[in-house]
Each structure stands twice: as structure tokens, then as C-alpha cells.
Image 1: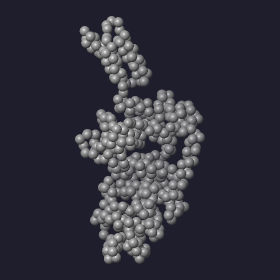
Image 2: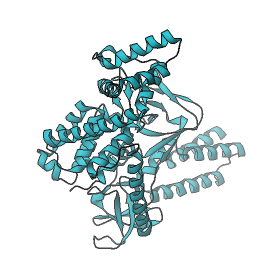
Image 3: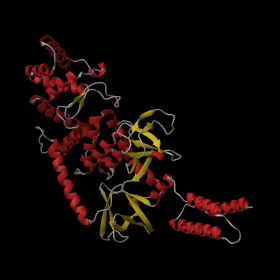
Image 4: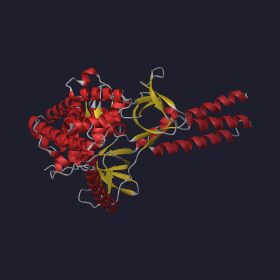
Length: 478
């Protein structure tokens, strides 16, 4: 009899506590109903339930109401919207009232989330940080696209919480590991499996893999809205930082030319490529296209690196030879042989890329000595000016780009990978049906950037692409 009563009670609880996903008010009402029903069952005078059975019923009830990690995540994004500017501004304004002429009470960073409170006509009432106000619905994305935008903009992070985990090449556990995710580290989330049991995290620009959602804590990143005073202070600080960064990168003889566009492109590429005059390394395994050496402040690769070193050497061969000799080890005869061999390598015309020529640690030290010499720095500056001028010429003459923002973005892409830069630029022109419209449309740079982000080669370097985009947006279009 007791077992039968327990089954009846359990059936009632299961039916009345069935999961309801909808408006929060409905959820609250149903939870109150569940609690009240449970209390009635436990206190019922119709039949007797012993203490152990009552505990089991209560335990079952509260276990059913506990959210899974996936449900908690979904609940977080249910009421979110992602703001987007109609132009190249870095911020979207929050109005005091739902009308364009209303006072601006806050500034939300572009492509960041806000909490959606309600829809009022054509305006969303939103909350961001301490500020509540209105944003036109044309500037807010809601519903199914929210998650995609968060993923695209690195707006979701995962904390590896239990132990080091293997990053799998696909969402299947049996697939090979492509790297490790380390306990205590936070990584951007770039995808979810169809069943939401696995997430894909980006460990570095070239390493990404799948881990179980059970092994991580998920967090959505927020940039709270600024007040008018905070916004004005921020803009002033950013202008100072940008000027200081430009001056810092244009160092060691690479002074401003007086051409704002040229100087910005030079600083941008130097920033993206490291800005280290004595840099020299062999090809990196994660970059499959690299088969030989990369050198200098603007990271010349392959035959461009070979040509630069040849130019430095021939500018003062006697001094260059001595620098190389001082960098190698061994007795006099061995040092002479090593010096002659490297000097011959630098001055001949054989292709280092085709030969997949790698350099020993000792040879790299010698090459760094050449690069860091007074001639080396001077010639790097000269070479950079010539190369940047050439790339600006390609942008203007080959692709008829007149918008300085587009020219700067193109030059950085071209420096990194000429072939893909051409492909991306042609795709942007086709998107607008003409180069003229690409130059004139207010979202021309945005479209060019979006196409670059989807490119199979340049799209892997998300950090570089986003930084380049942020710099180019600040360039005057005139």
C-alpha cells in the first residue's frame, strides 16, 4: 500500500513539475505551484507518508528544478541583445526617451551585449551597467543571432576549472588532440556542438579544439555603458594613447614623414609584425606556408628577407663580414669557413623558400647582428618606406581605392599575404558592384573586414584583423 501511495505521489509531482521554458513570470508561477503542490502532498490527511518517503519526494522535486550548465548559459542570453552602430563609430548611444532627439544618457561599446527589458514601438528599453534607456531596434540584434555574434566577437569565455584537458579536433571524444587547455586558464569560446555538450575554444590564433562543457565555467563578457563624462574622458585618453603608440613604433630612425596615412600604415604594420629590428627566426610549424627565415621590424619573409639581408651586407661588406665572424664560434679556420659560407648564402641568388633553408642558432645570431647594426636599422627603415609606398600604390592604382581607411586595411593584408589580400579586396568590390561604391559607402571598411575575417588564411589571425580594423576606423576618410 505504501509503495502504491509513493508511486501516486511521485506521478503527481512529475506531472506538476514538468519543465516550462518561457516568460520568467510563468516560470515563477509554476515554481510556486510546484512548491504548494508538494507541500499539500506531504501534509495530506488523505493518506499517510512516512518521513523517509517524504524526504525522497522533496529530494526528487528540488532535483528536477535544478538547472544544468547549458540551461544556465541559455538563460543568460535569453534577454540579451547585441548593439551595432550604423556607421563606423565605436559606440551606440542610449537615449533617455524612445526618440532620436532625446538626451543621450549612455554610450555602449559597439558589438557588446545589453539587457533587453521591453520593446516600446521601434525602440528597445535596455539596461547596461547602471544606465537604463532606449536604443532604436535597428541598432540591436536579438533572439537567435545573439549567440552567433557573441561567438564571432569573442564575447563568451570558458574557464578550465577541473584539470588540464585535451583539445580535440572535432566534437567527438575519439578524435585526435590538437593541444591542451590548462586548468585555471580562460579561453574564448568560438563554437558549440549541436547537442551543446561540447564547446570549441581558441587557445591561440592557430590552435583551437573541442572540450566537454562539464569541464568549464562559461562567462559572457560585458562592457557596461559609459556616462557622457566617462565617454569624453575615454575618447581623450584613447587619442593620447594612439599618438604615443604611433611615436613609439616609429622609432630608431623611422620618424614621421608628415603624411598621416603613410605614418599610420607604417605604425600599424610595425605593431602587427613586432617592431623589433633584430628579430630573426626560422619558419614556425603552425604556419604551414613558412619554409624559411623571417627577419626585421616589419617581419620580411623568405626572399624579401633574403633581399633585405643582401642589401644590408652589400652596403658595407667589410663591416658585415666582421659582424658575422664575431658571432660564430670555433677556431680561426672554422670561423673563417662558417663566415664565408653564410656570406655566400646572403649574397647569392638561390631561393631560400624553394630550398626550405633553415638557419642554425649560430647563424641566426649572426643575422641578428647584421639587422641590429646602424646600417641594418637604416636600411630596414628605407626598405619599409619603399615597401609601404609600393603597397599604397597597388591599392590606389590596381584596385582604385581612394578611401584612406580601405587603403590602410588593404596594405596590412597585402603585407601579410598578397594573394589573399587581392582575393578579399575583389570580393568587397563585387559586394558593392563597383569600386566607387566600396569607397563611398559608410560600411565599406566593415564589409572588407568581415570578408577578411572569413578568409581561410587571414581569418585565422583574429587578433590582428580586429586590431587593424580598430585602427583603420579612426583614420579620416578624406
